[in-house]
Image (cartoon, rainbow, N blue to C red; front, side):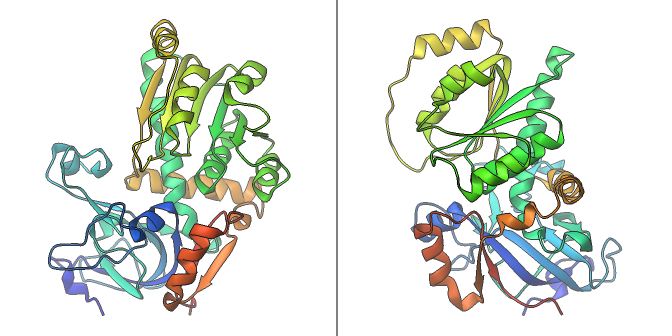
Length: 348
């Protein structure tokens, strides 16, 4: 059982874990593709998508009170300048710290203790969907980075966006872009109708199967795309997106390709298009607390504008920490799953 004094200066917050979302990262860690145990341990507690309730706080904690619903961020402070100003997700350190992923234990456990710096309050009306906040923070960061980069243009008013991938992240990106008023085309391999395609269309967005309409063709028919958000981890898709991107456009890359696959691309055409079209490609890793807080705002807006939509992403619950094998089986085998999550404890 963790104790409040594990965080110095009376700043500990003890949280009871209620739910933990899991994704491809957890599957790949389980397969040994990456991730590392904290110093002094020969195992890593996985699970980086947390949701819980505050049990107790240290005497110097004024940000939270027992009973608050919370989500914890993933990255932790390193030694670089970027870490020191709170942008841990922009660290230049070779060794980085991510709870549940690398060198820090995660949240597939009954309780955890952390500093308020890394904890974000979730309003009670969002408690049923609060476990989606970590992937929503990734969507928020990628979109915000695109807008931040395009401040160079003085006036950037994107009208059309493409989201490549319709898993949890792709769906949340589609939601966030629709909340900002963009025309959204979401592309995935599986032809409609699926739950994923129905969720896209419920937002007033367009769903296309890349088996029927490749990305380049989609750009010709429904573009130009001012923003393309990649959420697949397929390198071949990345280069196709570079070619499909419109002038003054931004390509946001969030997928990780765990392999050494080589692809043949029309390099000269892509290079020319990027230079003459003032295009940008940016990689975006997981987010700091600013994007978690913005995610809370968008999720609250979504509850009002698209009632019940977020709940439909929570497709495959697993009951109890002792069901780890079933959790991994769903991640590996269940192709219809949008979000697999573990019900760790009851909210009482």
